[in-house]
Length: 634
Image 1 (cartoon, rainbow, N blue to C red):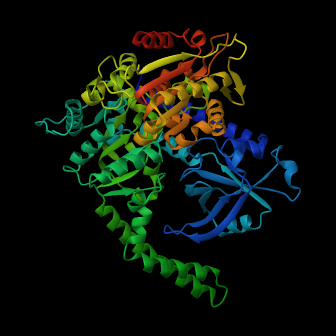
Image 2: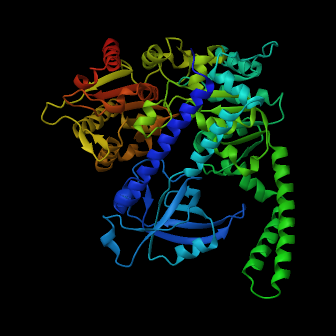
Image 3: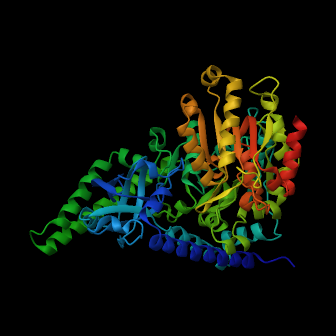
């Protein structure tokens, strides 16, 4: 007998609780037992801080600028900062005795929580809860800041799951049953719309979205034009509906789809904080549009008057309170007028899944919700937004990176099983697979095609045979020194792993390939390269080796070094992958998660170079098949 939808959701809630408890415990351990230097090195903290100016932003939040005064050599090694807009942060300080606390982690933490409003390089703007909080920071001896546990998002996910589980009637209950039971998904019936600028599978996907009464899934393998297809589906839906909600798990994914919609001429209102802080992005954020409204200057004057009255100690107290009440009423009326104008003008409301619970969207309902990168979103997070929608369109690829789960128990319990994945398995008829890929040459594409997509993909003619060099092979595997050789093998690097011999071999291999291409051609054609490793320790080592060797100086702007997760959604002409694992036991850790390898392999356009110890990796059938496939190409 099939498991009931309520039972499935209750298990998800139980595993989410397990993940939350694990994260809280890890955060407590980090706070109490980890020294400042270690936190700074891992990108979790800035210390010492320098405070800049403070002011009230257009949302009437008190914010303060902070500047990172920490040494550059211990800054976060990842290209993407962990301090993103919307993330919660807490402040700490040392006492006057100073450095004796740096290794012990004995610090004083302030009780209030701030939120990142803006972040770039060594400057952030932090929203504070009260003026008193600002005064505490101003009087601190040596001030630091670290990421805080995102309890708000957990609270929203628990609330959403509780709403779905308890729903007896209504659209939410219907969608729950459709998604998790044998109840069929319904479709409209009308003639298909033609889109000559799209390929056949993209056209079919857009039409399936238009026909869906309940749910549709756009399955977009790497390079198949998922974003192009989704933008077209949204554009066509807006011919039939006045407004839609577009969400994704991360701010970056929301920014990406929002930018593409703006390029298409769609009016977008971005709720929340964009990660890609460009003039173009800021132009359609709620905050910038709010400031641009003709009534804003009057509203700002009223808000300033309210603050001055609160700070004033002169005059009759009752009269002052009456004035404040009248001014607050005027401010509320002006805010309502501005908001109504902004939302009436917008065709697309864009935000993260958690951001759909923003107070600005309270009470709003949408005919269609589009969830991009849905295969990376926890089911509970999806339900936050689904509560506002009549029907849902999921887009993503469940054969690529899953949601990040930190608790081993929650992972075993299936917390990483997404709602999109459940629908793909439960309702295959609502799934549209995009079949033509425009990224990889055919030799690179064929292995992941057969391993992950049942051989159903094909390469577009314009990319099928392209390459960088004549008489070159698009894929190769360099066997790195194994654990039983004197210089080979992996080593522990804190919580990560490194393989120094393989790191050196990785750069030596790339250097030989660069020499074959030639410096002038590399720079003239801007042939770009991605060096990928699943392990952060190896990434740190590779970056250090690149910086030390003068050979790489002319090519620094062409080379990106990052983890698999850091390369999600990106592509390069050349991809070099350092697999790291090399031991007598054949232990390959999370390299067993083949979805990660699918992402890594499919970043390459014209050349893919793998480096790894075959004797360790090829004990797993997948890597054995990969090695055999590479050998066949030579």
